[in-house]
Image (cartoon, rainbow, N blue to C red; front, side, top):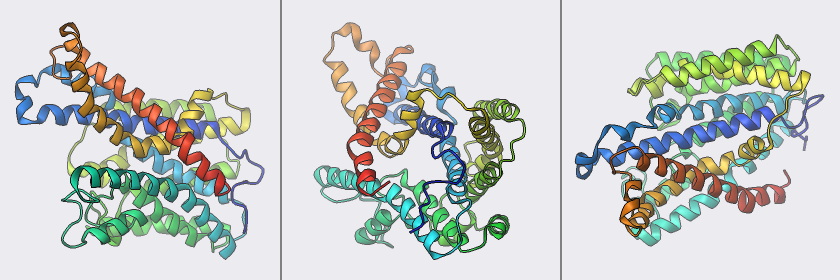
Length: 382
């Protein structure tokens, strides 16, 4: 098969992309820390504790869901970056799909198995009672979850809804690899037009529950936009990279800081409109700078990027365990330390939970990467 892991005349590994992956995973992690705090205080039993300081770190994580949008733009960029210059045809398409499948599915299956075992021990069944809908049934739900096929319920691991989109991106892009390269990018534009037509026709949904709503999802435009940046980079069209780095940083910060829409429109089109161009500018500027002038990326940022997939898939499970275990631990501490409870008045409970959550999730993600993901990738020949 054609080797698609060695792009021609380009660095095999971009530190800037790894750093951005790590940032995206951290953003999603912080978002879920904030959301768990919000859900905790929204319970009726917590009404008397619903004090203002529960929102202390809210501004830092409220838009952290945009880490998913960053992942999608990066994914489109990488797809073009690793396939540019390769001959069109079946061999290239097969190699591409194999490389993508072994990147996603083994770890996904491993962690789904862990969560399924947990549900068996705690709930007496392989899935949550409300997950396997009457339309699907348990076996159909599990099969679709494991294969990342769209369905009415979220997959076994909730974050897998984004992987459903990723697999769709890969399959369509693999089809484009049969086309000559000069035509391939016009096909990407055609793909974007089709998405726009379907969305305008009312087929776009907050969550893709079938192939039609998946095809109409405007999140696909983030992938295509990233592919456009990949096209510019692989053709060495480098235009003032530092300017784009600055522009990307400023506009991304403004998007994270100012966009606060929580309506259904957020997941239909709002996030795409707000975050896509800033992330594209940042990715273009950083990668162009790295390729032309070099870019020193701290090793810890590259490591975090390496762990980002493991961190992304595992962090909600870790946070859920902390939510259950941490209060019991604090109860056993001296009374003078009970201010660390999440519901205690003041800021420390919120900050303590956030710190423990961040630390534990990153450590767990790193361990999963080191002990599971990386060995699997090596065995499969990455």
